[in-house]
Length: 272
Length: 162
Image 1 (tube, rainbow over the protein chains, first blue to last red):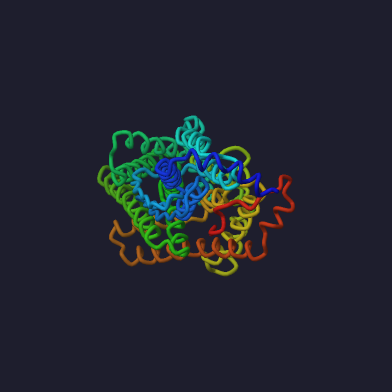
Image 2 (image 1 turned 60 degrees about the vertical axis):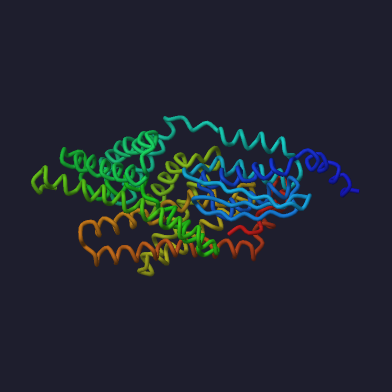
């Protein structure tokens, strides 16, 4: 019978996996999903899928962008739970893809506890992309957005260069554990000042298209959309939290950009 | 000319953003193609209807269906493609303009731009929700699964996909 073969392959994982270890692993998987910019429901379903595939009778997860609670009933009938705080969030789709693959493997019974723990560890320690590729990404994003918003070729070139510089501000300041609000403020101000400078020096002609092109790599447009998607899906707390996060980021960038405009007007005496 | 160039710029900008989001391999051009398709639908519709939200709604429907098809064929989460392909549509610039007008003291203009921004984000979210529901109703997944070279098994944890 196919069913009995299925049972045989499942038995070792049930025997060897300690419920506490399963709980920790499931919570880590959900934390990794949220830290990589995954949706709320994906984090919750990942935790539940890990827990049930590795020998839990019942698992329930409640996730928000800043933390998650996972409660888990083992085969012994005892209830265990864990809280994880999430402080850093950065979009990393490669991690999301690999965690999704791992969940599929667990669901089909082709991965046991040891294999899942090892894969998850590998996913967590996934090396970042080569710096040159990130710089190319920043340049392409800002340059082509400037073209899309009606800029000319020289505007696109300016915004690509400014985009490369601005894209490095975040990681550089984040290393000094500065708050996100301050990082966004500095990045918004730097983007605006550099674009105004290029306009003044005659390298670019359309300052609006140039600034907005650069700002596009800073602003949380995807976060706003995901916040509304969370709310539509019924994850009300997570959606409101994501919306607040996006709102604060946009506020910081705009305060930086607005301040830079004022400063520029003071320095140049009202020109441009 | 611009109706051919604009989708190209949108696709290439998405390609850049996908690199920043650490998307890899063949998913990169596929996400960029989705963004170009979305923009090609959105711009003419917005011009014809006089409402940006209508264009964004239709574009995110197209992107959603495209992503669901790819997700089933390539066994990837659909949102990997969605997150990248909606980038030209998402109202990041609107968020920025809203706050900038407010910082400059133009409160009424900030309200106007702010409401348009929320409307745009809502239209995109609605389009994605509709395309996800429609693709489930039409069992796009089972159709794509039949087309698929490697027979996908009904993956766990996907029942609640939005």
